[in-house]
Length: 271
Length: 354
Image 1 (cartoon, chains in turn green, yellow):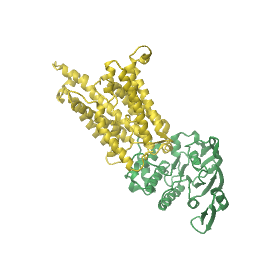
Image 2 (cartoon, chains in turn green, brown):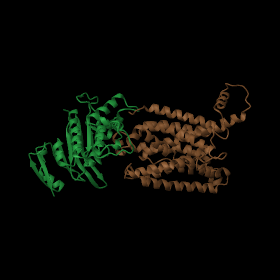
Image 3 (cartoon, helix red, strand yellow):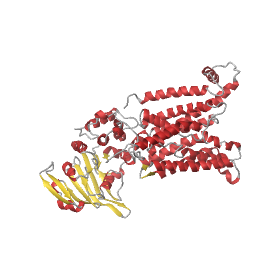
C-alpha cells in the first residue's frame, strides 16, 4: 500500500498572534476509516478541521491529501475531493431540497448540470432517506431533516458509486464532520452516523469532531484526543483510551461500565 | 428541477415585456397608433419611399418617445438585476441599490461633474477626464458608498440587518446632503434639475444615453450570469461557499464592481430610482425560486417591464405634467419593503439571513 494514501497533517502549528491554537500536530487519517477527533472546548478541534479542509492555512507545517499539499490545490479540484458537514447550516433564501443537494455538484459541472449530476443528487437523497422531500422548501424542514439534506449535499459533492473502485484520478475522497449531530434528537443522530459509517465501504476517509464521547467510541475506528493544541492520545481501539487521560483532559471523573453498547462498554462521567 | 422549465417563464416574461414596450411607445402626450408606428419604422427602413407629411410625429417618435421607452426598459433591467445581485451578496432580501447607497453615491459623483465640472480654475477638475467625467465619478461615488455600507454591516462573514439599514440610511443621507448642496449652489438652470433628477426621470433620454446604458448592462449582465452557481452557494454562508470551490472574497468584489458599473451608468442618465431592485427579486422569489440561474435573467425581464409600466403611469397621471419616476416606485416599493421587514421580524430573528 502506498504510504502517502489518505490525509496527513505534518507538524501543523496554528497561532493566533502569539498564542498557539495547534502546536505541532502530526497525524495521519487512513482511508475507509471513521476517524474521530475528541477534546474539550478550546482544545483546537475546530481549528484542526479548518486547516485539514483547506479553509484555513497553518502558520507552519503542512496538510497533505494522498501526498499532495492542500495549499497547492485550486478551490474547485479541492472541493471535488473533500466535503464538510457543519453543525447547522442556514439558508439565506428558500430553495428546494433538490436545489440544495445539487449545490454539492457545483464543483463538478460548468454552467449547466449534466444528467449524471441529477442522478447523483437523486441517489444521495435516497441514501439519506429524503427522496420524498426533494421538492419541499428547505427552510420548512425540521432541524433533523435539514441536516439530512445537508448530508446529502456533501455526499453528492464527493460522490462515488458503491463498488466503484476505478477512481479516475486515483485520489481519495475525504468527508469532514464538524459536530454533525449536535442539537439533533437521538433518531437523527443515529441515522446520520449510520449513513456516514455506510460510506466507509466506498473508501471515503471520514474525520469527525464529536462531542458525545460514548457516541464517538461506539461509531469511531480511531480516536485522536486533542488537549491544548496537542495530541494527548491517539488510539485505534476505544478500549485503549484510559480513564486517567479522559479525567485529565476533560477535568471530570470517568468510569467505564463494561458490557454495554456496541463498543463493549459505556463511560460514566462525574464532576 | 421544478414544474415548468425556466425557459417557459422567461418566454412569458418576455411576451409581457414586449406588450409593455409597445404600449409605452403608443401612449403619451403624442398618441401613436401601432399602425402609425409600423409606418414610421417602415419609412425609417426605407420600405415606404412615399413622402409623409407627418415629419413632426416621426421626429417625436424616433427622437423622444423611442429612446425614452428603451431607457426605461434598460434602467428597469439594471435595477432589477442589481437588486438580485446585491441581495445575493449581502445574503439579505432588503438590500437594493437605492437603500444601500449605490444610487445615491452615483448621483453625488455625477452631480459633482454637472455643477462643478463646467467651472473654471480649481473647479475644472473634471476637464482631463473629458466625456468620461460623469461615468467615472458616478462609478467612484457608487462604489465608495456600497463598499462603506458593506464593510459596516458585515463582520465575520455575516451581514447584520439593522446595521445594514442604519449604514444605508447614513450613507444615503450624506450623499443626499452633498447632492442637495450642489444643486443649491448651482447657477446653471440645468444643474438645478438635479432636484428633479434625484427622484428619477426619463425625459432627458436620448440615443447616446441609451447606448451607454445598454452597453454597460449587456456586458455586466452576461458576466454576472456566469456567477449564478457561486451566488447560490453563498446562500449557505461564506465558509460553505468556499468549501464548494467558490472564492467568496473575489466573488463579492467582482460582483460589486459589475453591479456598480451598471448602476452608476444608469443613475448618471436617469437619476435615483429606489425600490425597483427590491420589489422585482422579491416577487420572483415568491412566485418561483431563489436560484440565481433563474433570478438573474428573470429580474432583468421583470425589472424592465415594471419600469416601462411605471413610466407610462408617470406620463399619464397628471398630464401634461410628469411625475418623477421615483415617486411612483416608492409608492409601490415602500409597502413591500415594510412587509418584508415585518415578515422577517415574525420569523423571530432579525439577522436570520446572516
